[in-house]
Amino acid sequence: MASKLPTVAIIGQANVGKSSLFNRMVRAQQAIVAREAGTTRDNVLGKVEHKHHTFWLVDTAGLKDPNDEFEASIQEQITEAADAADVILVVVDSSQYVSDQDRTVAKKALRSKKQVILVTNKADLKTTVSPDEFKRLGIKHIISTSAEHTNGIVDVLDAIVELIPAAHEEEPDEILRVSLIGRPNVGKSNLFNTLAGKQQAIVANIAGTTRDVNRIAIRYGGRHIELLDTAGMRKPGKQEVGIEKFSVLRTLQAIEESDVCFLLMDVNELNTQLDQRLAGIIDEAGKGLVIVISKWDSVEDKDAYTRDALAPKIAHNFKFVPWAPLIFTSSVTGQNVTKLFDLALDIDARRGQETKTRVLNDMLQKAIQRHPPAGLKNTHPKLRYMVQTDTTPPWFVIYGSNLKYIHWSYKRYLERLVRETYNYAGTPIKFSFRDEKQIKANREKEQLAKEKLAQKTDTDEE
Image (cartoon, rainbow, N blue to C red):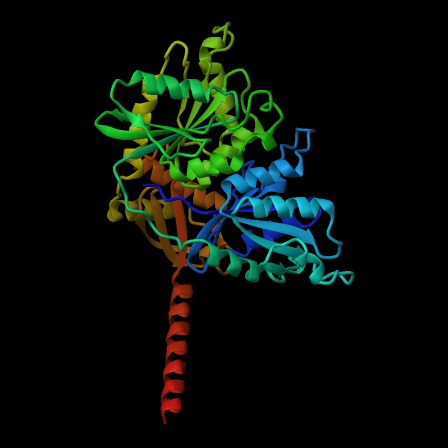
């Protein structure tokens, strides 16, 4: 079973410092996968680790499509957050008296029956209002912060991790979970029904699921596959308005639960910024990815609008996930629909494959001889050896010294070589760099702390 991380949503009216708070909480973490050049993902989503807990942090202020002039109402944001988040951070400006909007936000958040924390931000300003003012909002847990000066950020993280379960690996099962991801009206429901209808041996509709994710269990190629459809997020007529109307949080949870994601795009409306953002989220979550161009039957002039003409344009827009296969489908004619199941099974097998350490290190040494990593004047990174530490997604650790000087382009180069050595089409692969000097220094520090503690215990006993 793919692990499912808790979600924490930041809500509140404009200009209270939600995005600053988000950036501080995300930047404070070492374990965030760094934003690499070439991705167009906005900072609306971060994976945060704190005290053996991991969670997704979502800034609802960032869920607005920059090309969309319609500003979603605050109620819309709160409803969205309350539906899908495990913990809600309500942010207010501590230099302003409580407004009607603040009361609305607090009331809706509390009505959601989720865990709610009130963050009174901008506490560094001289004009801060008395803390008693904010007790009127009815939220028991109040934390004062200054995102600008990083004050109170750790207190917020501490409060969150008390409310969510510790990170743990769920027991693996044999079910392959595949989700259909994409904007409204790109044909997810049609594809879902076609995929389900193609199979004679449907086990059952799975009961007890949320109203926004349809699931069906299918048997294909000797495997149990659970298909998740993230459609049905909005009533018809409310779907055209852009990213606010697109339930990012629920989509995120479907991605988190999946092994492989099919990112659907309507052939008549390709390469929107949101599609790129979704691909970035799937990549960061470490899930398998297939870019699925739907409604191919609706293209009338197939000669002028050929697959060969379209594919390079799509590849260019998704060049930050060059490993993701591209497939053209039609739910109406059934073109390539069953191929999707075969693709998912292939990707799942590749995500689980293990490498040979000897092969990896031969590859690493040849890579260094061909292109030694650049560094500063007297401090060049030294890469000594690499090992694979995990699968689904495949994870590689490289040991050496001065590794902080390795440029992101060199990491891309190493990833390309690993992919040429082993076939990892359809899945992201992750790298960690461990500095041996740093590891040694940390061990010595720990040892010293233990010795000091032992000495203190001896002295106390005397």
